[in-house]
Image 1 (cartoon, rainbow, N blue to C red):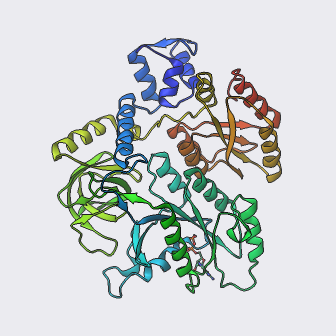
Image 2 (tube, protein in one colour):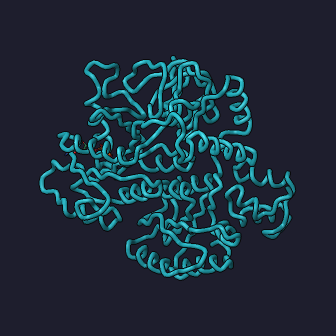
Image 3 (cartoon, rainbow, N blue to C red):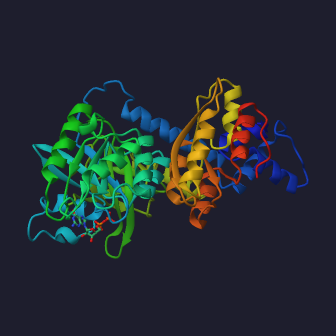
Length: 482
Ligand code: GDP
């Protein structure tokens, strides 16, 4: 401190223009390069829902995660861990049925709760390999977890109903999986139905950048039926092969950390949280910090409801002992002792929870990206395009693709038809993309989420305005926001 409006905007991931407007409303019109004192900077950030100090703490946390995961170097004690799989796809294409079918083979008759008991993740064994399936309700949740820096998934199984083919949410799921950089295995589901046209589905996959292996591409397409169980063994086999190829590793000997998948308050047992251990081994009696919550692990259960003493990497567990309910995507860490866990949790709570999730330092506005380009460290301008019709989306894309700039490469992370939805926003948040809304508006919940996450949605109605804006931005001459 002092800090310029520009730097503050970068630090909290909110448009500089917003900050300038706020100062204007306070009767203090300032330019982007004007300096703010510490108090004003903190006040403005607070108004934007970002706590500068929490932001700092969060960076430390992410650094810690990186350190604990050991980057890409070999850490002593690393071993192969079970693969973590998430199933994504369009609504009604069979995700839930498939998850249940894969699990039912591993659920013993008479097991407490049986197949009906709700679980956030489970493990199955196939060909001697354990596979962990995460039951996230859709790709928006997948994106939101990633936006919070929680990358738990190693492999995505993309479910596409053979009778329906590639649908809008299938495309969204593809974009999310690709942005996450994880391998995709396609399950062409409902193959038991009469008269399905497999070739058509393969064709649609191809045109959406998922070229099937049988057509010379990188993506295995397994024919499955979640209802007759046809192809499930082959699907599991393909997952095992993919896992062997990538050798996903974990180190059971470091302090445990991982991610909360979901949590709730149980009448009798207090807070119950579904956690997935990413590194280390979590044990009964460990003192943990998890988002705003802390506590000593009192009890630990696997997905069959069996009590566990300890959980190595990739194990999904349900634990009790936390004092408040953490959020999905919150990281958890085993701490040195309960005092350390309490202190960290209490200082987080004092500042409020919402803030602790805001701002991850990704450039989120056109201006931010350009500012970075000027400093010589920008590579990509990620965009998400939503348009009113496939035709206008197509026209917009080809116009944007014509733009060329030595320092900034425009990258279309996702393209879709219809209003801006929550999936678009979480994808933007996870990838640092800007959303271009062409002749469409944002759904209410998406707009609120964009606000919270600091995602910029720019609305346009004329193609040339989009390309002019980007061009102008590329040349550092940003027009006022529409
Ligand atoms: P989700 O929305 O993707 O989770 O889809 P669901 O698992 O709820 O499935 C939607 C509907 O499709 C349900 O009525 C299922 O019974 C049905 N379904 C799912 N998989 C199959 C399948 O392989 N074959 C047939 N014939 N129906 C299926």
